[in-house]
Length: 147
Image 1 (spheres, rainbow, N blue to C red):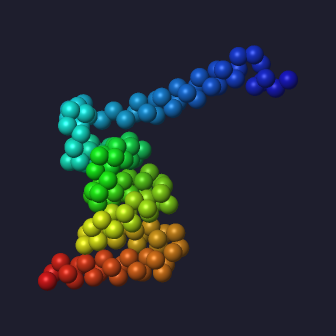
Image 2: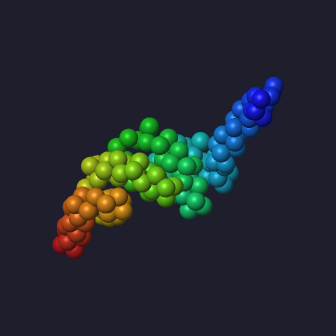
Image 3: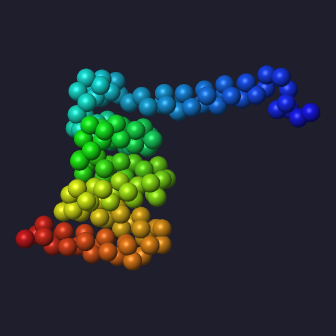
């Protein structure tokens, strides 16, 4: 009889796992004034501030959660999609970041940063043709910015 077969051991393991999940979610406790402001006024701007705070403190899952929550109310925000993509990439989820960055570009193709980040992620994934296309598009945006 293995150690996991003992009575009660499975329940202890389950409780431990659930406690870890609760702790991970509870870790999303940013500065109280920012959290309170977002709850009182759930605007894109407030989500950007709190989500950016999480990202700057390497709490990427919390940043993603904040940006995705804001996207429910403002799905056409290119900025929120871009920040979601950055947080996913920062949290070691580059393949999940690509759709968010592509959506940001679709919504506002003139912004350079999403093109650059997408090119970088494509390059890292070995998708050099796709990366080159994004580099070209970002270069075209730079040329237009100087006109």
